[in-house]
Amino acid sequence: MMKTIDFISLGCSKNLVDSENLMGMFEAKNFHVTHDSDNPKGEVVVVNTCGFIADAKEESINTILEQVARKNEGKVQKIFVMGCLSERYLADLEAEIPEVDGWYGKFNYRQLLEDLLKSEDCPADDSEMGKCNVIHRKLTTPSHYAYIKISEGCDRHCAYCAIPLITGRHQSRPMEDILDEVRWLVSQGTKEFQVIAQELTYYGVDIYGEQRIAELIERMADIDGVEWIRLHYAYPNHFPWGLLRVMREKKNVCRYMDIALQHISDHMLTRMRRNTSKKETMELIERMRREVPGIHLRTTLMVGFPGETDEDFQELVDFVKWARFERMGAFSYSEEDGTYSAEHYEDDVPEEVKEQRLSRLMRVQQNISAEIEAEKVGQTLPVIIDRIEGDYYIGRTEFCSPEVDPEVLISIHDETLEIGKFYQVRIIDSEEFDLYGIVEK
Image (cartoon, rainbow, N blue to C red; front, side):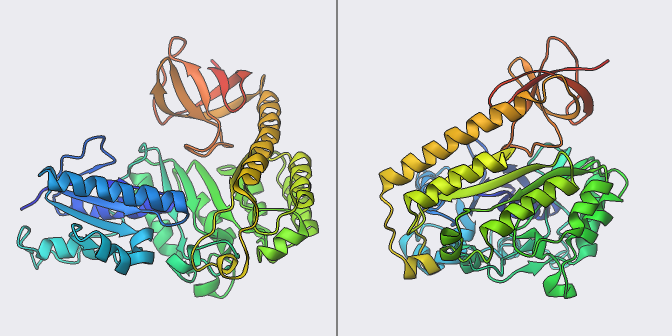
């Protein structure tokens, strides 16, 4: 019977949660599982793929081919593939890469365990089949924080986005299932929860008939042991204002909102099919900052969308200067098969122009980020310690999500700190994206 399974997760944190759920199910069946090993040595490798944009698809295919080469060298016995890429391109992949032993998508990946148990290598124990609880997650993050996926899919139809083509319509998880998972994770020592979804503000509409995200977060915040909750991937249209009340009243709901805006010119917002306007977007930002003083906003912006003029881009630059986002990412438009923009627009902005615009926009944001981080010097902030790296403990404030946001560096020569513990840290210096601090006695 095969006992060791290596998982390789590509793409976003939502994919990571799927991997963790499946890893927990395998571990409950007494398999040994590893994740993102530098040198996978298991008899089975499972690649969880991303199929969102061209670069991600290329990375996924290259990773599969690397494992095929290892199989041909006798280093791997079986390869299984799951996730967004195989959900979207299953027939093509099966034909092109026959060396893969099994293909699974975004929604049937749990079948992999049952199929493996039924195979000749792993005789099934019928008395145990189907009893793996999804809450048996094996965290790949440090144990003090976890991602909580509250829904899958998206009912928005932005012109550039392939997510609805991959994941289908929005599907909320029942609230009690989510809260049970949070309680279970707290019992395992988890303190911090990153709430994720393709579009979290729509949570509940499909199963309760109304937006219930504010109620979900409020009930989550009331669970003993939940010390930080952070929200990711909101949509600006029909924003649920009750969420701001919860953020303001519940001290363990971080003053942080990840809300992808993509652009600001009405010309671009219309072509992108965003169902909002410049005026509405600016009013949204002003209201968020007014109702939740100190809130940190993270957004994502796009340059080079078909039809973007120099005037549209300048409007975007001026908007970034006005909004002064605490966190901002940007990317160039890339045409995706099957999307509205691929079928109705010409990708008419030259690549060199896209690169120039992206570079300029990020230079503007770098200056803003440096100024905002410098304003924190002299403040004392709660910081959770994630890891040790070189001569520093690496931690984060409530305004920082793991892996994507600025971090707080504390010299290991000054203190002996505990991973996963909160400390009051006085900020003594800043760089463009990082802070330096000392623990207050």
